[in-house]
Image 1 (tube, rainbow, N blue to C red):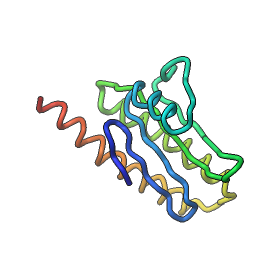
Image 2: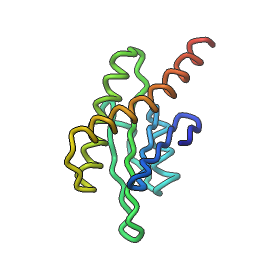
Image 3: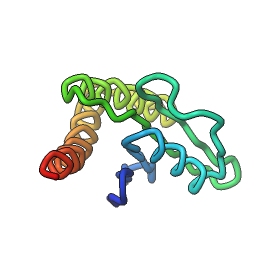
Amino acid sequence: MTNVNNVLEIDLQTTATRVAFCYGSKAYRKYMEEQFGLELESEITASGCTQVVTNNNTGAFRLVIGVKKIKDIYELKGLVVHELNHVVTEWFNHFGFNCDELRSYTLQYLYQEIMVSLDKKLEKKASK
């Protein structure tokens, strides 16, 4: 797991899948450009998005979440859960998984990793 600026990367080691959580439109655009060479014409159009990126040459499968900076903490955390649900669904579909318990544990794991990082970031910002 790496946490640089407003991007948290989490590896799902069972399938060598990297999930990136980008907090803020600028972080999302910068990450997509630096990691994949994708120059996005606009920032996140809704409050959040989940992008699937595959490399046909290497078989690499990556999932990128982008969420706008939202002041209402409950709206923000609800949005993160919403996008994580998309991530887990895409991951399950890609690898052919069909197990509710694995789905629940994966969602819980990703949520906990992201929330610890996000809460620290928000606490640091609030103390300034």
